[in-house]
Every structure is written in structure tokens, then in C-alpha cells.
Amino acid sequence: MFGFLKKAFRKTNQAIKEVLPEKKKTISKDEFEEILLEADVNYELVEKLLEQMSEPINRVQAYNTLISIFQYEAKWIDPNDYPIFVEMIIGVNGAGKTTTIAKLANLYKKEGYSVMLGAGDTFRAAAIEQLSRWADRLDVPIVSTRQGHDPSAVVYDTILSAKSKHIDRVIIDTAGRLHTQNNLAQELKKMVRVAQKAMPEAPHRKLLILDGTQGSSTINQAKKFNEFVGIDGVIVTKLDGTAKGGSIMSIAYELKMPVYYIGTGETPDDLIPFRADEYINTILDEIFKK
Image (cartoon, rainbow, N blue to C red; front, side, top):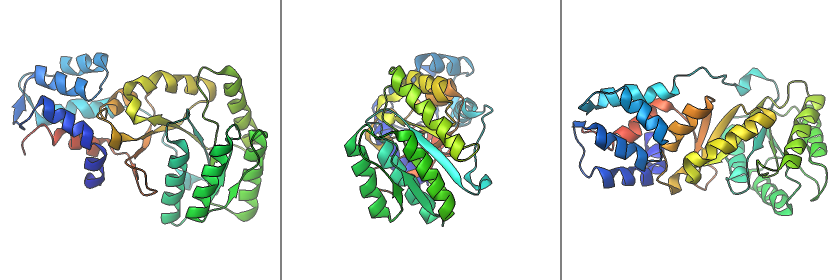
């Protein structure tokens, strides 16, 4: 796991080395502040963290302070609690939504579960084609329609098909809607209502895909989506391509919701469960001598 994390945060770690070329036993508050800001931790959060710390800062103090960001109450949803688990994947275009769906499907298959995809992004023909290619590649069934058709009908048909075939995991794509477009937000709400008609309590989990290369700027986007439909957790993608790995701290601090997975690359295997302690230690390994 640490190997995957080091790969994911390679650019973030390079940014840390530019601030602190040599690892130390202890560092000053000024050095720690510069490191956190360079990694795209929100300024307000950095100041709050530094208020809790005394100089010189050692690894134990740094770990205890940073891990406190993640010590909030959040409802973690376990797919194993449902005989058929339906989740809806939400996010703006370009965040890596379709690729993340493929990664989730691959992960579930490796865990021994049957998977079905629902191509609910009927706004773009390319989205239907891309997800269909992934379904073929991963050898999982997909329910789809033509561009411009009602996405809620796809949701309904996907869930009914999964029920009839006793599928374990259902992953439904949605249009890459801008959070400022109210008409598309209404469409998303309708998709959720129709899912509940097809199966009470569905979708059991609504995951928001956040583009890691956008850093802390994704937080307002996430808050809007949460207002619209109630987000149950996030997946942060493209972390291997950015020096903004510290933004996960800002995301967790602001949203107070579970970070379920992080994307570490382009292949179906490049999705790992997020563990706050491993994440913090990966960053601190670049700062402090053992």
C-alpha cells in the first residue's frame, strides 16, 4: 500500500523536497507552514494547525496534529450490508468519472462480486461509448441507451436488470454536470427518485469524483453537489499527476465526509482505499528522518 501511495504522491513529495531538500529530526513552524501550503493545504487550515503546535516540531507532534483533521464523525457505508448494492457516481466533466467507474468495477470483480454498469450519462454519446468499452474490457454487463434519452430510464432499467440477475454491485454513471447548472441538478435529483422507485433506499451510496489536480478549489463544487442530492463520500482522482496532494486534508476538513478511495494512475488497478494514517505517514516520510 505504501508503494502505491508513494507513487500517487510523487509530485507532492517532490514539492516538499524543494522546500526542505534534506530530511530533519525537527523543523520550525515556518518550514512546516511552507510545506503544507506548497502541498495545497488551505491557508486557513494551515494556520489552525500551527496554532496547536509548539516549536520545534517533531514527527510525533506533526502526525498527531495532521491526523486530527480526519477525526470527525462520518457515516461510512459498507456495500456488504446490502444484498444488491447500488451506487451513483457524480462529478463534473474531466474529473475522471468514467475511468473511476471502471476502476471500481475492477476492484469489485477482484473481490469476487458480480458487477453491472448503468450508462446514465446520456448527455454525451462519447460517455456511453467509453463506458461500454470499459464494460467489454472488464467483461461486465452494461445497460445503456442512445444519446439524448432519459437518464432516469437507464437508472430504472439497470436496477431492475440487476435484481433479476442477482448482481452484487451496481454502478451508475451520471452526466458530468456543472454544479451551477440548475436544470441538470434537477435531473440528478430525478435520477435519485427513480432509483428509489426501482429499489427502496437506492442509490445506497452517492460518490462524488473530485479532480486532485484542481486541489482545494474542488471544495465549493462538492458543497454544491451535497446541497443538491446529499453526497455520501468522495473519491479523489489524478493524484499521481499533481503536487496538490495536501488538498485531501482541506477536503476532509471542509466536507466532513468519508474519503473512500484515491486514484493513483490510469489503469484499472490504480484505485486504492484511502487510509488517513498511511496518507499522513507518506507525507511525513519526506520531511522527517527516521
